[in-house]
Length: 192
Image (cartoon, rainbow, N blue to C red; front, top):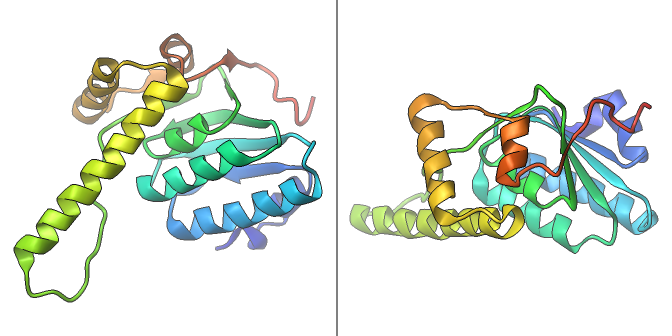
């Protein structure tokens, strides 16, 4: 299903509200970028809200949307409405203002390899290319955490390890302590 198939999403998008309620993929990110850029071009001084209810997905695609959000003239406000996990955190980091509802949560973990290289007879080469691509993307992901959340490399790796081993959820208040969240909100300004 595309974003166009949800009538409520279309009405929200016309007001600058975009919902990430699925797994992050190239298809979802491409569609979101198109809709967000269209809104930004028409209304560059209007706020853009991104509502997060995502368990994550493809980090490489999330990094693309992060880069786009950082270039917009609009004030971007990310709101964790319940869950913002894994790759979704990279998109959340791209928002100029980051809010979370009190009972929302985050899960961090190191990424798994999600690349597909087709048709090659050199298996070792494929493995090495995958390894290098994964290292580059993980480096970018870590650097975003350091830059946007002022998070040390040690804290990043500890949270990733905790997330992988125990599926440790970071509460909204802890996420605020870590610099992931700017503000915990009890009212969402969209319908107040």
